Amino acid sequence: LVGITRWRATYYRDYATFLAQWTSVNSGSAQAFGTSAGEKLERGDFAGARKDYEQALSMRPDYARAEAGLGTALAKLGKPREALKHLQ
Image 1 (cartoon, rainbow, N blue to C red):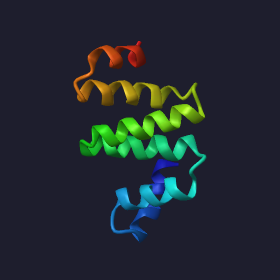
Image 2 (image 1 turned 90 degrees about the vertical axis):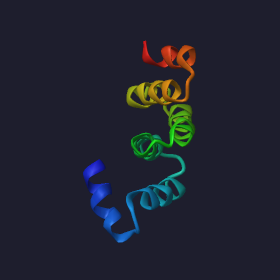
Image 3 (image 1 turned 180 degrees about the vertical axis):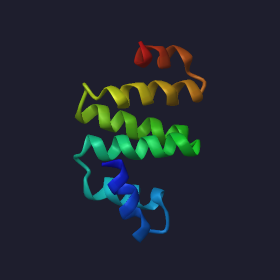
């Protein structure tokens, strides 16, 4: 799925713009928010990643990748105690 979304992103200015549109259109998709969060994490937008991971987890509490990503984002934001709850 990620490969397909990156391919489709060639129609947009950049991948981040594509993901913003994707989460807007698929506002009920945990996968859309998880993918967007991962991209934000890679770009160093830790606050944005946190927000998207939290949104993904609100839709699908068993989303392990989002749980781990949220822990990473929180650690990068200097919140190690909160991060540990999501990384254990």
